[in-house]
Image (tube, rainbow, N blue to C red):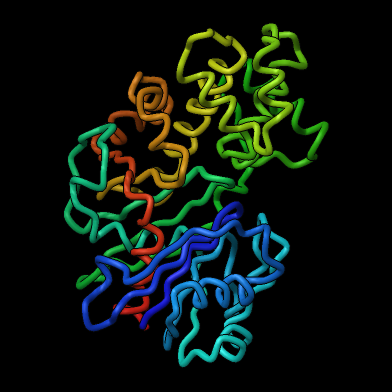
Length: 328
């Protein structure tokens, strides 16, 4: 049995695969709340106990940088080490890879049914591929062709300096600098960033917060889904939520274009993470693509880069399993 895990800041997805049958369909899978466990080892033991199976080889995609087989999770109080996992879980092989690198390894195996296209473009065979994923945080990765296959590389580009492109974004930057000091794209274009935008708009008196929304936010463990749902449904109308989502999409479009230019993603750009599939109607209205192309003299170049949304929620798990089979 092969064990693949996608360790998110909020939830951890795990799946067992029978190596003799490939990694297209797991034998057993589950999603567990990460914060309920003191360590990855305890979470995996619980999962294997529920599955009634053991695993010989495992790979875990983690939301943070992996250095020397060790990772301190960006949005969890966990320190994960390959040697500790191997010993405590009785594994023959234990590997850690960045969670966006795992999604990247899945991309060559995705089909049309796993994608929604925002821009057709003109893909170049063997061209570099960009991956950007707003979820709890903002992950980024990329792939390059080595002549035989695509190789994935992690990045922490989501923590690079945020650059505003409008007056309202400039005000948001100043507001967040007072709170955080350094302001990255993740502070805005992520699930944790959505409340930052909302609170700024509320603080400057952009619009009134409806009483019904205030009650829902007060009762919510995570305000981001409440804000997004209120923005998407539009009835009752909420100017604060709608504008929050507009700014989120604008900033995400800008940073997606930045990443595409930096790696010359002539093969395509892929949006992963949990948020894009849930806001597809808003992503297709034009604001995202407008900001993606808002790169001055290079707008025409970016028009040739295909842009897709990954709709398969299991892409990270699949990619981790493909990595274990193909690269280890």
